[in-house]
Amino acid sequence: MRYQNFEFNFYDLIKPNKMKNLIIFPVAILFVIMFTNSTTIKTKNIEKTSSQLCVITKIVLNKMPSLNSNGSPWDMGSGPDVYCQILSQNKVLFESGTKEDLDISTLPVSYTNKLPFTLPYLNQSYMIKFFDYENGTLLKSDTYIFGFTFNPKDYYQKSSIYLHNDSYACTLYTEWE
Image (cartoon, rainbow, N blue to C red; front, side, top):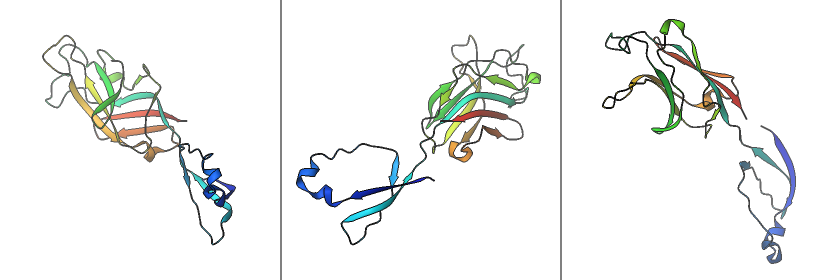
């Protein structure tokens, strides 16, 4: 953390003619103030909180099985049509384009369409979900393939977020602003 020193006289704030000139602006700074017996505080520390944002620049689908959980192909006669979503509290924040007729043997595959995308909060859980788009079916919803939960603060300042288990894996490439 970086600290900056400032001189400030609190007595000036309680003078009636000074209060009318006081304007308060909301900022992302945590003030650490120590009081003394005197009315003038000469030097105090101000600790800046992290105001950085996590920006996703590329999503890579690294690994998934060629068959669904029933042991059947994802799509009859072709590969799955895979897209992903990033959600927060069950609300879709981002949806990628679809990689149609994906040949699982050619993984990894990258998603860059509609990116970069900035996650709105650093210290919040998000979920990335992958789906098989059911093209031309009105009554059937898209098939959920897999998903992972992640919190950007756990990967702070890293260039990627690698999420995986035995059967599935994806990587979110990140920049920090």
